[in-house]
Image (cartoon, rainbow, N blue to C red):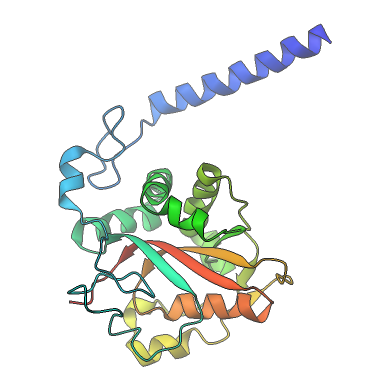
Length: 250
C-alpha cells in the first residue's frame, strides 16, 4: 500500500511538472492580440476594451444585440419558429473577435478555447445552470473537415466549459452527415437549404430534457436550427445554445 501511495504521488508530480514545462514552452496567449498574456489576465486589459461584450438589450430568442429595450426579437427571429429554445452569445462579431476566431479555427490556436470557455462561464454560467442543462454538445464538423483541421473548435470550447461547470459533455451526440458549403458564402435562403438534413443524432436522447449546444459563430440561426432539429427528432426536450461571436440587429 505504501509503495502504491508513493507511485501515485510520483505520477501526480510528473503530470504537474509536465503542465508547468508546457506553460514555460507555450505560455498562454491573449486570444484578442495573440501576445503572451499577463499572469491573472487571460485577456489583456487593453484588448478587453477593444471587444464588445453582448449585453442587454438583446433578442429574447437568439441573444443578438438589438437597438432598444422595446424590441423583443431581432429581425431574424420575428415571425420565425426556431428549433432551439433560447441562445446566448459572448461577444459581438466584429474585427478583433473575427480575427481571434479565425486564428482559433485555421491557425491551430486551440489554446484560445480555454479562455473562451472561461468567459462563457463567467457571462452565462448562471443562466446555463438555471436552465438545468444535463449535457453539453458541440456542433460537429464533417469527418473529413475535422481530419484536415485536426480538431473541432466547438468541441474544444464545450469540453472546457463542461469541466468548469461540472456538466457532462457529449462529443458524439450527433454527427454531420454532409460536407456543406461555408454559411458565410450564402444568402439567407441558401443557408437554410444548405443545411437541410445535414445533422443526425447518433442515439436516442429522450432522457435528456435540456441540452446546451456550443458553436463558434451565430449568424441567422440556420446551423443552430438544423442541429437542434436533429436532437429534437431523437427525443430531446429544450435545446439551448451558447456561441462566442454574434452579429447585431442594427
